[in-house]
Image 1 (cartoon, one colour):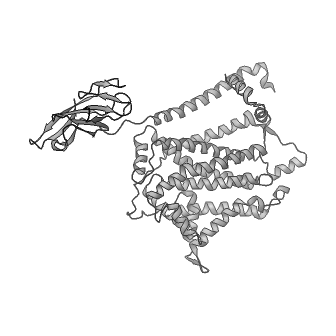
Image 2 (cartoon, rainbow over the protein chains, first blue to last red):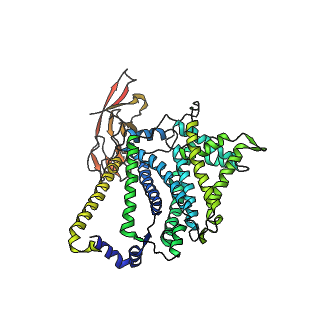
Image 3 (cartoon, rainbow over the protein chains, first blue to last red):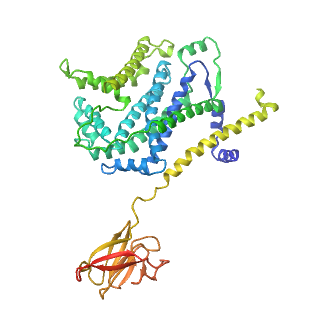
Length: 359
Length: 152
């Protein structure tokens, strides 16, 4: 049956190129190979987000008067609505976690070095987009916590010199976080970001398929010295390994959704007092905690502005990393960059935990 | 590789079947909640049995008004001789909302030009069945009665 369908398509579309590609593609096997699966898990979670997101659209209503009630309706009235929402919320968090793991593993294995600079750049941009998904999606249930977190989050953009006020107004769809912000975030979350993701992710995957997997410099050195690095067929061996990891992700996701359901909280009220211990999602916590620690004025500059500029600079550096570590392609990766990467991981982990304990 | 040799064939078939079974059960266990999810839950709004349309004086003879009856529209007609009649305003053809036509004293569905008479029976056009009849009762002080529409 499958063969007949394939033959029918092949006769019309000439799939011989594709077939040869799949049949001949191999993936190198070495002691760092396990990191190859992190991107695959991230991709799987993106798929989960798309599927559950589309399902939530069937009942969700993006207005200040109805958003909270519609989510309440989904989790209490719709069959398996609680499951779909919990999976969406948990998968979002796992997705960002895995994107970070994927980022740092490709970073330390120097997978960004020539000729894969563009794969890295598209990947970093995708990470920023995922953070945008997290930030915009957090507001959509229109509960108290999300409301105030969004107020603070959009407000901190005001610290950007010159264009800060414009960015705040642009993000909020007005001077304050209101129903207009909700509608705007909804549009960003379900249309604008998915459109950008489609293009970036398409490019990211295309680059990977065109260039094959990168091997770390240490393995490359052995290869250049004449050693033959074992290869694994992409299909079915590697694909089945990938799928096995997807099952692990699915199991974690199901367990989290069942045993730690996502709270809905109380409905947002602009005139209610801010609840104590307000803080953003964990992936913004390190930034949040840093901003709290910076004194209000540092060398005549506003502390907030300094922090926001610092984060923007860090994001910029991350984006152009392949062009900074120029000797990585010759097998001489910069030690300073490795050190910076380790420091960045320590900083993120410590400040995230610190942010939790401080709140 | 020896895995392609004949002695290993049953083992391979067994493993392939096991794998296929695993994928199939995953597929079903994902599809089942999704299928249940897309089916809309039963409406939380209770079925309406009667509704007060207004005071008698609000309705002129030879006129009609479309009113909310539960989640669906109802048509209240006051005939030229002052009598009240009420119907479901949902056309039996394709669920359009019907209206009263004072010039011919008929009920008309503008979607496909269906006509009903003032007993709800089809006069012409595509509607397959007569309109559902509702009961009209007048309640209260003479001259100031409430017009009450209820399901018969």
